Image 1 (spheres, helix red, strand yellow):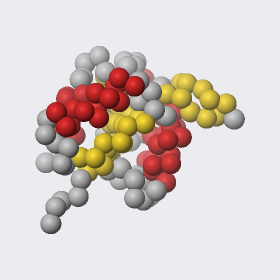
Image 2 (tube, one colour):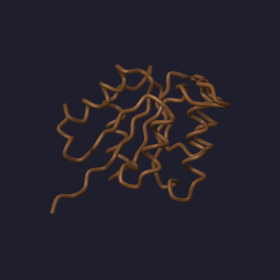
Image 3 (cartoon, helix red, strand yellow):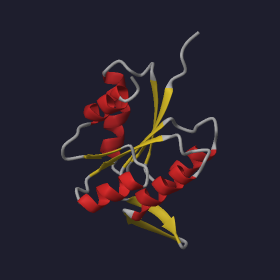
Image 4 (tube, helix red, strand yellow):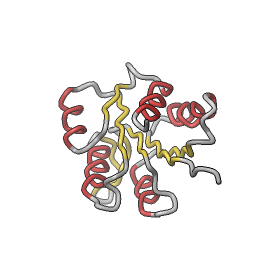
Length: 141
């Protein structure tokens, strides 16, 4: 019997980043091990997290992205931090591995993300999608 694929949810408002991530596992012959869902915003992530059938094992997310607040769409790092906090405080979701992949190099952002429960904080400037793939695979061994 085939082993079920690990589900990865990529949340990034940059379309090029979503395309690169979606293809990197295929390029490295890992599409039989991982199922990638790529979306651009927090509301899409919340819908996926709410459904047991689509709920991911791993989330790769930026911090700054569009989200709804007080009836308005805003783009700020609060989006990523709020989502991370929600996941890690929810007993049904807290087991999900969350890796932050951000352009923001501010040490305070990194400390806050790790304190809220992110497994890693990787900087886009220093890490390519294939580096993230290695982080995912190495921590599963």
